[in-house]
Length: 398
Image 1 (cartoon, rainbow, N blue to C red):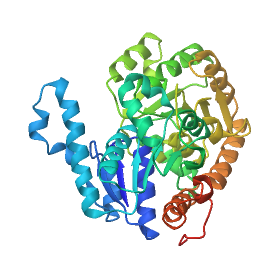
Image 2 (image 1 turned 90 degrees about the vertical axis):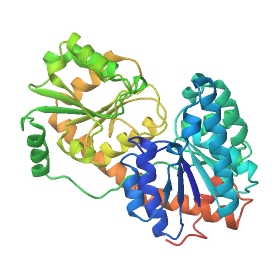
Image 3 (image 1 turned 180 degrees about the horizontal axis):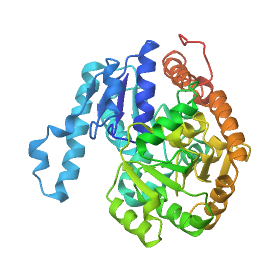
């Protein structure tokens, strides 16, 4: 199987693939990865499993010297032709493209190579299409002809249907996370001391790359309005890759008077440790497909507050597990934070319910099983609707 990905920096899709691909290999499905972006930390678990990853973009000295108006088109054309050659030579059973850019380049290359079994995964809402309508049109045209198009939330698959993808080719596979490990009180204390945080402090954590649509400014505004009402001392830990707005966020936190309470940790590796040290997890996004950060906080047993966008509601479920708030609404976000911050008993109940929900619905092995069902089913029963193949274990090995 050939997987076309956009890169392996820190992000939800990259994390998803780092969990998925080694487990597929263990089930007898042999992926090879063609990556269109930077290598990043998420490539290492895939390489450690013995899976080949090609990062060809750094090997285009002539293309990268072209002026900007021509460079982008030249890169697209070069990668499409290069990938077409790989597909024709290696003849993979399946070509699966993750994210829009990979779908365009991988889909075009597979079509030129006349490859019969091509899949795409859409992992976010289509807000990104407004920034590049030409690319969006190409993507929509390509996915309508693919054997399967996957979404990771009901919100995403509804949009795929609206774009004209045949209903029998649309499938839903939720993200999965490793489950079963429970952090101890000593783990909590050790991580806090490592971070220089008081054992009794209220610790809020937000795991989201520093991108405007992740809503950090909304979160800061919410906290500034209730800072004096929160248990003291308190700290907000923000973990995520900086897209260029970190300095602006730091200035904004200072302007709001909460700069001393906010820590931007950057591309932090031990996210599990952060959740182990946290009292509350917060995701203030304006858009999401299906957030790995929410799932990771659930499985860690951390009560979660998230905006009601994309698949966040499907992950959290109801008020017995966490709190959903309107997007771009700092006042509502502040109400939810104040409620959870004010009751350790409530946080304990929500945390236990969160862990139970993650263990029962979002275990990584269940997620991997659905991919295996789909891949083997597409080759064995290509006429079946995709949503039936993901549930059908007739051809799977585990």
